Length: 101
View: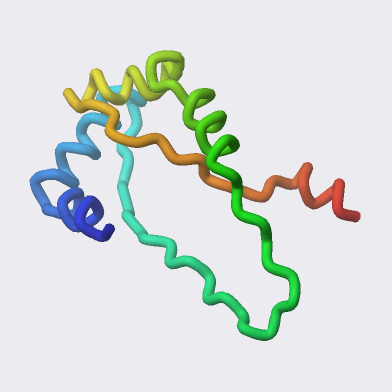
């Protein structure tokens, strides 16, 4: 799954992406691409996080329709691209941290 990253890191693609972002934002944007490796699982953990059921995954996919995402539609238009897959990123926010305290 590093293929997409390697493709975008090619000098001509990286400069094209940066130019496109500059034309949209009006500011010069420098892109740095990284791949986040999954955290190693601990064999000693007794409690494993539950995986989402297939029904939950279908609901998430249904809620993430590319047609209803205006930001995605603009990006697709700017880069003359098509949406292949939409994934939910689990990001901990400061609100999440406050609820845990």
